[in-house]
Image 1 (tube, rainbow, N blue to C red):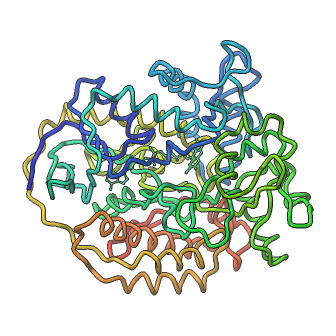
Image 2 (cartoon, helix red, strand yellow; image 1 turned 135 degrees about the horizontal axis):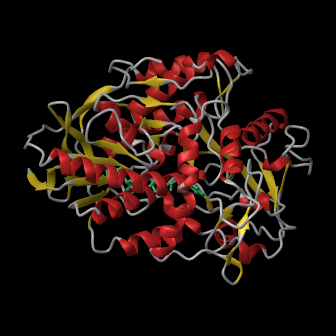
Length: 508
Ligand SMILES: Cc1cc2nc3c(=O)[nH]c(=O)nc-3n(C[C@H](O)[C@H](O)[C@H](O)COP(=O)(O)OP(=O)(O)OC[C@H]3O[C@@H](n4cnc5c(N)ncnc54)[C@H](O)[C@@H]3O)c2cc1C
């Protein structure tokens, strides 16, 4: 078993992990960054970053208000304000690291609008390639850091009630990085489902690592389905996203007969919050029996120049969006909940931090407002890096521990994804969720050797936790829709906290 020491280990090299690592490094700590794969969700982000710019008609109050409305009663208003208020500073820091955003006139950023936003406040880059620019700039800023690609985190090591490091698998086999502070920045969990906008590595590893370390996840039932994922018959795995910013620029959602999908559903029409639009699409598909609806972007000015990523994805699928409506369906997109942290990324386990999509700060509540996640990753990532550096300085070097390869329950991935897609997607029901939970409970323990083993074990733990949380929430709220409880129940306006199946639930 190889061994190494660091002050801070950051697991993940997307926006949150890189922001965290750079911040910890600036505090003078030794930092090791781990990444199991080249792809990040950050790279694929299209629409942009929601941020309140000075000298506009926008305000932190307005952004906070929109975020809280989307969050359907479960946002933590203090967390929302704290993160939104730091947005401009964090984006300026990113520009300092070399990021270049699109301008409407020289020196003035172009702002677009997305669902649920009352103002144009989304900065973007390369038209619809914002994430690629964020990733490029942060990768460049991190060139002097110790970044380990193809290094998989299997377990957070705990010694005497505090973090002692991470168990890692690399090409050199199992190893331990001893460190008093670990930051989970592992992204989302879209591969709980058969089709998702998320890259291959979004398998919920960070949530599982925290659950296995005995920590709770909160709001984990709230999985946002993006209303417009490109539809191609029989295609699974990662599917291209058709950004919401297209609707901000005038594209409309129609069914096969050209009838609006959202007319009369919500005052904001096609720009209603994502859960509303996704549920309207599901309802139309159920009513018509069709496989998909369509996004008509033919009237969007300069479509190919403004949306090059979407245009390329459509053309690759044989659809010319300038002349044909784009076939779309809702797709698993974003985890609103996750590992419980404060707004500095601190968990309840001393030395363990989490930031980005893996974390639940209280920013998103029951539904994330579009383009708030890159914002949260930047802001909380930076804060978690500083907090972890401070913790490491006080805690001192971690003691040497010698763990075994972990043994965890694992279900075959295809079966798990089929269960989740059938029973825990846009619309859920008690009977279906109970079926899924019964099956998840039959998962067989296995020694985790390969990346696939670890990801399947993570998916199994997280699927069970999502299904349990979804079953317990007997109401419809935010992006959690129950066919058997179609109304929102004011008595359930609280966050749910849950441990992994087989661990002690943390209670509600
Ligand atoms: C197609 C698409 C479009 C989007 N558009 C927008 C947008 O316009 N605006 C917006 O705000 N948000 C958008 N989002 C959401 C946003 O991109 C993500 O929420 C955000 O980028 C997540 O960043 P992160 O740093 O938390 O995780 P990621 O960027 O996903 O990075 C996760 C990292 O963790 C690593 N990792 C995971 N598990 C392990 C492990 N066990 N061991 C080692 N490494 C591990 C991965 O290799 C990766 O490096 C979009 C998402 C998608 C998928």
